[in-house]
Amino acid sequence: MIAIGAVLFQISLGGIYSWSVLARALQEDGGGFGISRAQAVLPFSVAIGVVFVGCFVGGRLQDRKGPRIVALMGGGLYAAGTILSSLATDVSLFWLMLLAYGIVGGLGLGMAYIVPVAMLQKWYPDKRGLITGVAVGGFGFGAVLASPLARWLVALYQPVPTRAFLPLGLCYLVLTVAGASVFRNPPPRPAVPGPRRQDFTCAQALHTRQWYMLTAMLTLNTISGIGFVAVTAGAAETLTGITAGAAAVLTGLMGLSNGAGRVILGMMSERFGRMRIFTLILTLEGLCLLAVPYATSLPLFVPLAAVIFACFGGAYAVMPATAGDFFGLTHAGAIYGLMNVAWSIGGVVGPLLVSTLAESAGYRTAFLTLACIPLAATVLPVLTRPPGRRSLRR
Image (cartoon, rainbow, N blue to C red):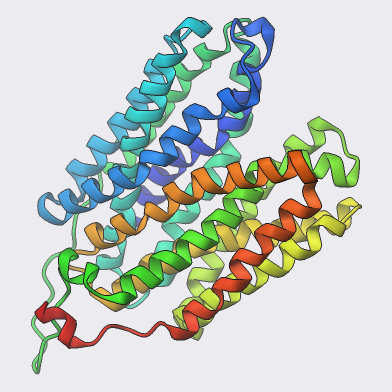
């Protein structure tokens, strides 16, 4: 029941990736906004930019207060930010959307997201890769479910599309409360005879080079992955010649690959090792980004895009399990929560980099540049080993 509640909880949080539907509506003159593409992406960018702060705060609170109260707080803030955005009914209130959806919603998203990731590892310590994959897989599938709902609501509430935020926020509130209601930490396990491994505190983890190497891996994967996600629809139109409507459907379906990648790659990391699978993730992502500019037909573009989406999502299943392996589970919330600075950096740098390059030099240059990032990063998993016990004395 706790695992089911975690998936339900993460599905609501995955609605953040339906923003492209709402951004398109904000750019239309009929909605009372008529803002530019760069302006329309700002609320999403602000939310992703502050999400790591919420992850860190939520992780520390969970380690001290338990998962349920933090999940309810984070889910409530996330839903409240979405609901308050419905009050921004014209361009003069765009600042309210930045504050509500960006700051309030982004902080709530971070606080909420970290809870099931850290909690489920304590329930399933021998299957951490699989269970985190299942939990964050719900996040990937959430975008698939939220995008058509958001599209329908935007059409329903024309000519004021921001009113769609009210029912969306209420849905998020119901799902997060329902999921969080079953959250709790497992009972203490019986002591095992023999020497007991001491877990790292957050401060001790930050004194190891391994924390920075793991965070660098996640950051570089995210820059390329989320950069591609940000322009998938436009790239599909330009490279394959499909219509805008078909490209939007394709982007939504790619969320299935994102979710599946989290489950499958998390499960594979149990059998083949975390660093081997992370090397595979970076390699496949880089090779597919090298090939995708030459995919001028849909049968070529779709599988390449699906692998990129799967690798981008899969890293967020493998990394929390890796952090648990390296630093222990006692302070897993705070330690991995702070690693989510990768999500914030990637969410800002990736889309900005790829959109700038695509506009000035075309998609081929943009994707070849993105491909170099994960391919160069493949050296990091090879060099990264668990920290020694001496680090605990610092």
